[in-house]
Length: 250
Image 1 (cartoon, one colour):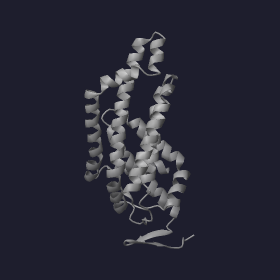
Image 2 (tube, helix red, strand yellow; image 1 turned 135 degrees about the vertical axis):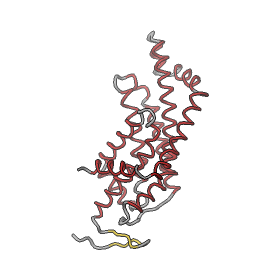
Image 3 (cartoon, one colour; image 1 turned 60 degrees about the vertical axis):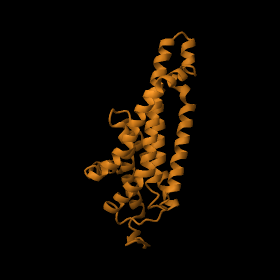
Image 4 (tube, helix red, strand yellow; image 1 turned 45 degrees about the vertical axis):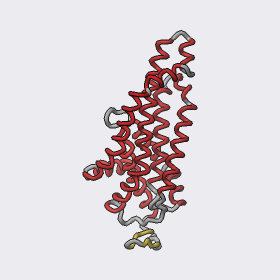
């Protein structure tokens, strides 16, 4: 059984703990309320703005005004859903992730020494910078939506990118040194991407979509901490609150 499957199965097992659902629903509820508010107060204005911008003006110029309006409406909803997802992701990364990581470290990975830096400021800055790059990339590639197939692929790509960049980093901050974190994120780049793409696909499932930020935090934590455990191969253990380095048995 590969490591990605193990992480997903452990995540499903963790969902059996009632207290975890409180952490899952908090960002989701905030995202739902924001989505409803934006749809009520901003959707019409957003559609009008998008119709006046490329690539929608190109469609209107080609005589496909009705198609341009439909595309703008779809684009407006995608913007609202993306904003709601990003807000839910930020809440999950900044507020929920430390609580979830603490809970999983104590119950599932008690043998793993904490050699990282548990810095709320660093985690917040990393998450906000990732969101900034996500929004820039999303806007820059918007004209590519006219290319057949890319209108489906690009939103998935950017959500997967944002999820991977945010949670692959946050999952390791408490336990891994800076060097360990860099090596693991580089060595496991493909599984982290696949996990991000799976989460991105789930965001488009009704009712489940806004739950995915915390589900992503859960899955990335299980994968990253097990990868760190395998990398150390028992060379690092925790004695009480004080980590000790021991010679590897090998």
